[in-house]
Length: 87
Image 1 (spheres, helix red, strand yellow):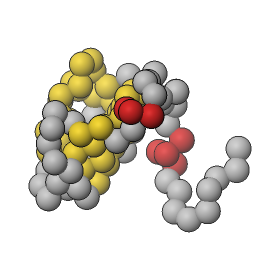
Image 2 (cartoon, rainbow, N blue to C red):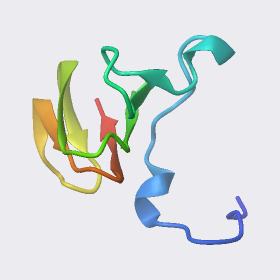
Image 3 (cartoon, rainbow, N blue to C red):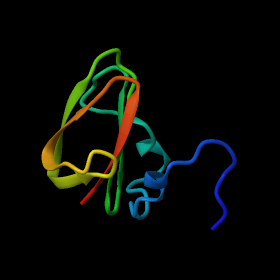
C-alpha cells in the first residue's frame, strides 16, 4: 500500500483494525479533558494530547503502546504527543 506524502513513522502502520462507531466517534475528548483525544478501533486505540501537560489515561483492558512498548491499562501520554495502543 502506498504511503501518504510527508512524515510517516513505522508505528503508523500498527494493526489497529477498523474504527469503532461512526463519524461521531472521531476525535472524542477523553473524559471531557480539554485537548486530550481518543479514538477506538477494533484492535486498540489512538490517542493525541495537546492539553498543555502530560495526561494519564486508563484503558478498559491491557494494551501495548506501539512507540513506548509499555503494556498496561494505564498510560502517560506527553503533551503535544500521541500514542497508538494495541490490544
